[in-house]
Length: 245
Image (cartoon, rainbow, N blue to C red; front, side, top):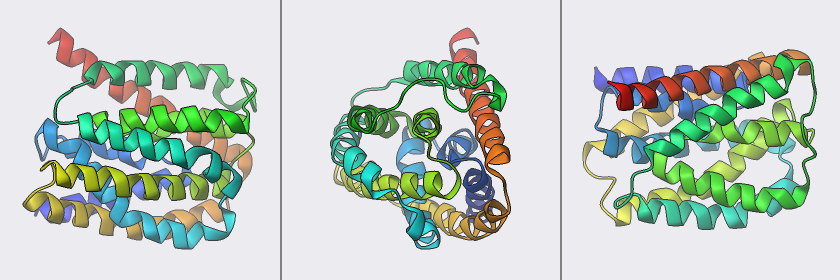
């Protein structure tokens, strides 16, 4: 039954994330936390992401913005490696609070979809952004929704946003998972759990693409902001409840 529920979680998370600009991993983190220990959440979520990602790459291949990939990916892979390497010796739950606040303030800055951009975004910014996001992603499990304001401000929406984030995440995940495995953070049944999540994610990608095709840019942006709002609230609730209770 555990494998079944992890499959369902992967399916639901990636169907939703396809039509709302990503964030599937952020949906998975609090859910997966019910099934495994906190120290296993980040490696497991990244493994599930990695297994399901090739399907999204195939489905959205022609929409990939390779100019952004070239700017983002090299530094992101370095950040992903360093974060995964430090995972066993450092905990940064407080970083989740910063991420939650950033997501909520970003929704407010976009005025819930009334504004199309909130700050000037340049291609050169993607390198330091990739390093920082992937470094902290390796430590806390999911930061994908944090990227959305930067993509939106660069004018990347819908299929281009989904495709470009997918290819970046896929290659960074190779580094992260290899490092987790080498350090003994991915062992035993976690491989099976990750496969179950990834297979569910693969099916969810198919459904998500069909829904996305008929969606307007305005509706897509609203769904992206709703996802950011939900993710921010959930993250803050989880982390603050840990400190307060």
